[in-house]
Amino acid sequence: MQRRLLAISCSALLLAGCAREASPPPAMDAKATASAAESGDYIGTTEPFAEHAVYFVLTDRFVNGDPSNDQRTQGGAHPTFDRPVAGAPAGRSDNIGYLGGDFKGLLDNADYIRGMGFGAVWVTPIVDNPDEAFAGGDPVKWGSMFTDRGKTGFHGYWGVNFYKLDEHLPSAGLDFAGLTKGLKQHGLKTVLDIVCNHGSPAYTMPTDQPKFGEIYDKDGTLLADHQNLHPGKLDPKGNPLHAFYNTKPGLAQLSDINENDPRVLDYFVGAYSQWIDQGADAFRIDTIPWMPHAYWHAFTTRIREKHPGFFMFGEAFNHDAATIAAHTLPRNAGVSVLDFPLKERLVEVFGRQGGGFERIAERLYLEDGPYQNPYELMTFYDNHDMARLDASDEGFIDANNFLFTARGIPVIYYGSETGFERGTAEHAGNRNYFGQERIDAAPASPIQQSLSRVANLRAKTPALQRGLQVNLLMQGDRAAFYRVLQHEGTHQIALVLLNKGAASAAFEVKEMLQPGRWRAALGGGDIEVASGGVLQATVPAHGVAVYLLDAAVTQPQLRAALERARAGAAPRG
Image (cartoon, rainbow, N blue to C red; front, side, top):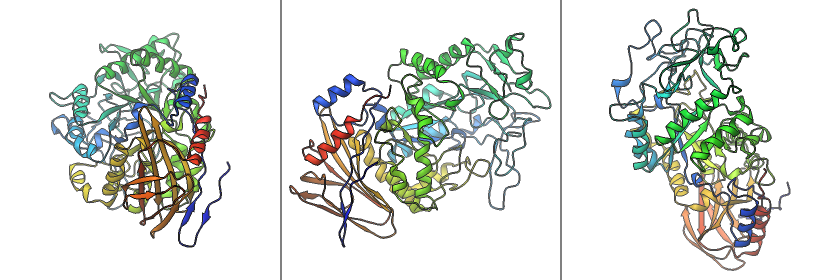
């Protein structure tokens, strides 16, 4: 990767940026790319969902809006409600039982989420889970991983009937269709978390428990039963109830779905189509690498036959871009993915380690990268399957300033807007209950205040949602880049200046700078730039400045940089 030199004056940085080649959106095939070039378009993605930043809630742990659906007496000898993890240090806690979060608690706080600048809510799986705590596996201990004994399906990922709504979530008059309708009334789309590769824990139980290792159809008929047998002891040819499962172990003691049984594809397409019909606007696909590309290609094709353009993104927990990018190719799943390679660097740069912006630059893959389209990747710094970001308030502020101005679709895990349980992993606080009191107190948090400013700016700024990115500087504590959108009557150039340092930073931008009146969207005041002029700005410590020029691109160097970016925008196939 070649970079232009940065000329540095004694009083400020003179930014002589480099153009980084960008990949095309999946929707733009070779013909569309050629058409865009002829029309003078500059656009990172035509994907409509790119407009919406995403707030991710683990529904049971967000807000208990309706105690009547808590099922507090459920489970008998293996109760499901409020199960603290043993071994917690003084003043700390974790819980592997249900804690009451539900659709009503989410809908009651839709204005809170929308007010922060989000346009979509990602909810964990909503399907029916077992009604007891799991008695097999290894016991959950403080800070343990891949341990399930004593845990319940509070997270939703232990499905047993994928057509049926879990009883902990709805209220009278508020089912999933009611939730999605209510969220839409507040300006929020619904991202539904889906699972196809596994069901509930299926073996190692001292005594076979109801529902565990079982799958039911939409009429409640038993389709599959692991019968508490190790996968190697299943007999799919001799026992029809075993045919849904693989005979080799998968994750932990989970029932591993046999993707080669044609009934499996029909079952999941039918189940998840039902939830689309009830208002799901997009899917997050759990553990996408655990089933082959052929399965996901067939699944996404059938979903999109009925719902053209339906947006989906997968979870491939891998920091190698070339590996996870395979899922984005049309010949495979043809979906977006969570950007784990970038996440790894965001944790380094904005966490306690404190690396420089150059560590991020090489993970953006704007120039000949492996992804079908990097502008459609879901960008994030933590979630429910890993330690939450371990950072100071300023680190969270810096991370959000980057996330909501750079390429990709931002995803924020519930509570991160206040630094909730920062640094904690699974079984050590990562999935703890947030609650109404914390939500009510959140506007006093400097993290939440800063997040709301930059997220709401992205929500109303097309260039930050879908524009090509041209980097000028990504080094140390400072970053500067353009986001440019010129498409279907929208002409907008955004100049983003980021400072994650502890002192204010002076920027002096000259190269590729188009003359005109640059409007200060965040920070400073409007700046009039003459032809060949300079834009000077001071960005406070841990701050961001965004200047907008609503005009077609005419500056020769910027046009050349964007042409190079667009020249690399060829579908990967």
